[in-house]
Image (cartoon, rainbow over the protein chains, first blue to last red):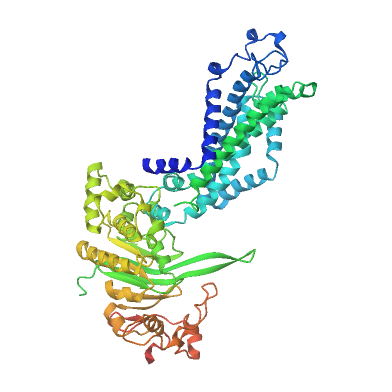
Amino acid sequence: MKLFKNELLIEYFEDKLAVVGLFVFTLLCIFALAPAIFSPQNPYDLAQLFLENSFQGPNQNFLLGTDEQGRDILSAIMYGLRVSLYVGLASTILSVIIGFSLGLISGYYGGWVDTIIMRIADIQLSFPAILIALIIMALWGAGIGKIIIAITIVNWVYYARTARGVVLSEKEKDYAQSAKALGMRNFAIIFREIMPNVTAPIIVIATVRIANAIILEATLSFLGLGVPITEPSLGSLIANGYQVLFSGYWWTSVFPGIILMVLIISINLIGDRTRDIMNPRLKR
Amino acid sequence: MSQSEVKLLEVRDVEKIFSVKVGSFEKKDLHALNKVSFDVFKGKTLSLVGESGCGKTTIGKVILGLYEATNGSVVFQDKDIAKLSPAQRGISQKDIQMIFQDPYSSLNPRKKIKTILEQPLKIHTKMKKKERLATMLSLCDDVGIDHTYLERYPHQFSGGQRQRIAIARAMILKPELILADEPISALDVSIQAQILNLMMDLKDKYKLTTLFITHDISVVKHLSDYVAVMYLGEIVEYASKDELFKNPKHPYTEMLFSTVPDIRTPLATESVLKTGEIQSPIDLPQGCFFANRCPYKVDACEQSHPELVDLGNKHLARCPRIGEF
């Protein structure tokens, strides 16, 4: 297994663009993990904010400028990045767990179990994702835990569908049949025999959908339905700056926007490369 | 001869009917197996021969428990297992193992050979880790795979090696009955002989009882004691190997023999024998299933369905005109 993983890693690094993507993403993650170390100030400690610093353009003291409360935008971005990444990763992990399991069960058992799970998925896919998330957030109100659950509810469908599709072909293969003939229990066959053969496409989709989850969170926060005011994400920073954008204070909105864009692009680059090296049709 | 023959497996009137959708609403019955009966004797090899779609793999899967028989009985170790799933069969399942056709799909690509071989031991025996390893190593010697292969993954092997591993997995529990479902047809011709030889060696060494499923009648000659010829879900001829090869009675058996290329005879002289399509198992004909392809067909053939007739000397055939040949 070790050799196998190293091979994949080596292959990953053959693409320069993907390496850049990974580097940028890692850098952003480091900032997000420990914003207190890197940021010039704690933007949410009111004792550190001075109103006379409000709406300063990018300068020596405030590299990316300040907002209406004299808050350093660079520091706010680092803290906001943490919230965005946390919501993106947590909701993706949750939806992989739920979607993957439901997809495996649905594909393996077939019949009415399959029908119920897949009809729910179909119905959900026929609504725009943002609409579902909006409704859930409007009903529940803002909150980090709530937005993670809302995004999970939107995203599990993609993993379930993919997993089900692969399971349908895998369960007919002789190794699954032979496990069944040995008297293995259905759950053991699903999770020990079949699951390892379904992980590759799920990993690929997950890397791409992290970006999607982050964008969804940013959109909800921009609309004021996402994370609470006390823990702003990149989306709420953009929304906050947007109110004063046309008064000439462009930096309050543009810089968080650029960072969000860089984050999404770097994740997509990683996702593209992961898909390339894990696609069994291109490889093996 | 007859004293040494102990019945190991008794298949009686097994029917398997699949329900298939015709159009949007209508469902029809597909008769994959029609009252199939045969015995497998201890230490002997029975070959099931027939073209694709004749139900030979289906009967294998019924015996193994992957399909539930619609009717009939499969008696193994004094127990009717025809309608039991592998998990319900419990300990007797350990004594029936299968070698699958395609070694590229029968080994889980994400598992080491060691894990694959160890699995049956973990499920069906109480061996300790060391005993399991010893069992695996001695079996590796038997099937001709290197001990170092245990740490590798299936994709690192060729088809022939994989099939050896698959045979090892089937053998590891020392089963009473091995079902071999076309174990060599997915392999290169040069490898086929090796695997056949291996199976014959193992048969001698372990006194294996084998149900050998194949479409290739030339292979049958090498390793079977008895042969059952199947056509459209039923057995049309059953005899000992020597008897069948010397004296084939059923026109279909004759046709199968004529398809075997032989260096001494000119190719395909009786092309008339090979015309026609197999009948649909959904709308079975009233008379003899083979009538539409049979060169000896008379009107009577399409009137009523023939029964298996005992011709003596353990030779059975199912043909309306059997008395005339």
